[in-house]
Image (cartoon, rainbow, N blue to C red; front, side, top):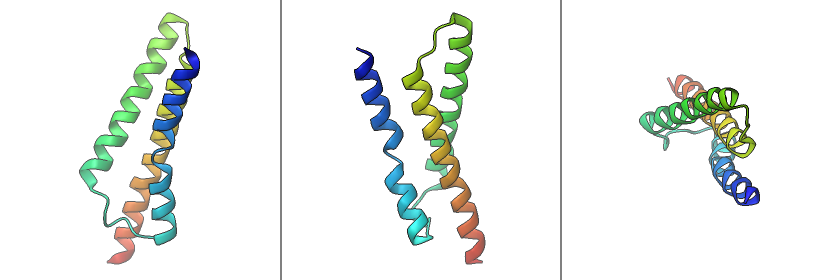
Length: 91
């Protein structure tokens, strides 16, 4: 059962990697919507905070979900920073 959780979390957490690679190699974020990035990063952050707080309270740690949201949040932070940087460079 835990393997299913790990596999699902792995799929979700790596789905942003191709976008990060594309942004890094093309140095362009024009196709990324600010609303999408802000909602995605906020969702990942709030889910991560909720998981941490609930896991501490219960004393059981859901490592697949924690890894998923931590990696997803890190990737969205990169994309937001890249969007800020590349839009600033355009001007």
